[in-house]
Image 1 (cartoon, rainbow over the protein chains, first blue to last red):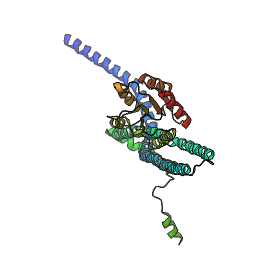
Image 2 (cartoon, each protein chain N blue to C red):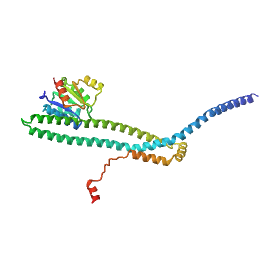
Image 3 (cartoon, each protein chain N blue to C red):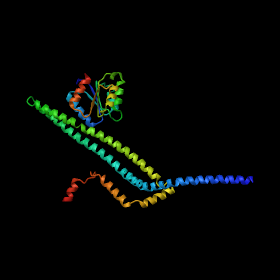
Image 4 (cartoon, chains in turn purple, cyan):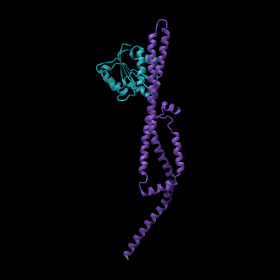
Length: 205
Length: 123
């Protein structure tokens, strides 16, 4: 009799546990359904983010190089102007006489003003350098984010299955057109391997 | 004023030429040029100067560290130092004052300002 009582008690406990489990399941299932729905919606977006990150990663180093090119080009041009100013100033000094002293001094003053106006090169270079540092930092963050996303993709069989379903749902055509639009927007219009003037002339001969 | 030996520290080749041209126009003839703080300290070793013009942002050793180093040396305790920089925030100027800088010019500036500030710190 005692044994039967004990067994019944255990059974009732188990039934209680199971009821608790089903109650929990009943509460959790709607949440899981919502979560899967959310993932279904968000994953194509994440896929798009991933593609954008990949594209941006290729573009950012180019942008950095172009900024460095601008600094170099403006520095060279500024020094050419400074060379000429120094020559003019020296030649002007040689030409100075009692009669033209006032005029020569006035021109020397203007030369000095032009000289100082060229400070813009150093100032813009510093601003560009700052922009370059920001780009580097963004590039680093993008690279990190991209590698994390790549590592996360398809780590488990569930996520692999989920990704393959999402991949089928992604609008490939839209993806391609977005990519083409990004390429066009960020196209490098200043070609750095330009055709030489001689080659152009040859094409016309 | 123009007889003084000047140390001029600036990493930008463009700014070096611009300010050098101006210093020569003012009448300075004895000028030591340096690209950064370290270079400056090497060049003034055994070759003391009487006026220092320095940029702030420079590689290797910046202007802030150069001023600290100079002010820690007995022979440079009272040498006039003029800082020429793009840093125009109030905090920057206050830092420069605390470091013991005697004058401060924010780029871009005119030849007149340079002349005026040099004259002020020297006198």
